[in-house]
Length: 89
Length: 427
Picture 1 (cartoon, each protein chain N blue to C red):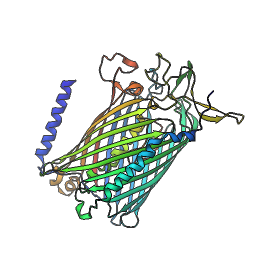
Picture 2: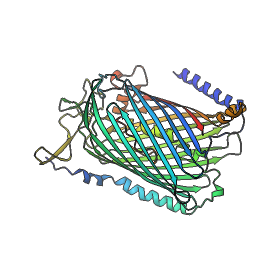
Picture 3: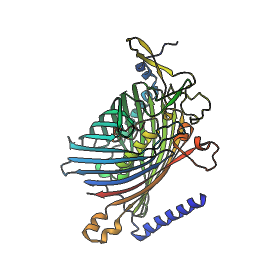
Picture 4: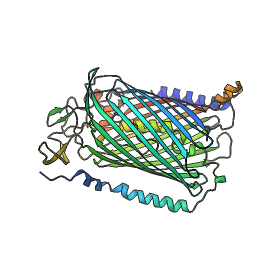
């Protein structure tokens, strides 16, 4: 019988988030660092539709809920969709 | 079917045109920067085994000093759920889940805020408490907004034994950490990057879902007690301005979400959403694709079985060795994992949604009450979720009546539908 690896060592296989995250952060820093939008220039950015989920938190929450129940993944809908507790696995 | 769709499309088009003509030719968008809002939504989900009615209410109010409170209530009324998922012999039952929550937000230095919340969810066999803490930090004249925070959820998992009996199966601890970076990229573009970490420890089996292992029917799956999940989301909002008052702009929101976990499940989900205001109406559309690759201990190698959907988990010989555990004598022995959950397999889905929001400006002539209600918004939306492989077989409804596989699944993509009716009332 082949010897199995402990669970914590399997975390080492998760390479793509470890690579993708710093690259994305670096790209946003480089791009954003060249642009400073003043408060009086934010007419369009202040529109509700420019917020996550076009500004509707309850809609994002419902989508996170049903995707969690029908997909094998969790998260990815922003910081407001965490937690909740649901025995729908 | 095609004729029906055409008729529905025609009616929708006429409805949109009438709404545009009946009120005003100027775009009236959703109220923004309101100090408070009550959102009432009725959500409906329908797939092969399950119908869910999910009414929710979310209320938030903010004072001039920046202090905010929020509360929410949601009900999941689940009917015709399948307790024998994975097999064709479903046993319908009805279940209710209640979820309540409240939160507070207090301003810190500048526009930075600190918020906390508590949520409680209860159903007949699952009870959970969630505590949340978030900090929002504004930097560089709000060009960068960071959100950091975490949640802890304590869940008690049980198994119903008839109408009154109940067996406690175990406890699940879940820690969730989030780091979100929002960056203004231009006067009409903003990008955001979110990383989330979930650490789940404890009982994670579904106690109702049987699985065949080496020809024997096991009452439920045997999953590892530790699961570490990573989720990364990268999204952008880009506004295209037009020289008109009827259609002032179009907003596109491309996004990609990526997942990986310690069980070997990985997935990728690109999507594109659009937002188009036309007069007092807002049109929104969504197209999302989801591709997942299976857990390292997922197997569907029994061949054709009479009570198992094609592609559903089934182990010809035994479970799959995954890490180690201790036996009764304290010796280290291999942990044999097997799952009954098709959602841990390889499959893809496509989600489409169309949404109409209508600002009730027609009520503005009806006195003070009408004036207040004229700022409210009515929402109507509907969508389809298409899936294939075992997940499509289990949850999806065959899209053609003469599907070759029939009651045991679909030969191609299967579908599920969802719809929402909402009312947004500024406070």
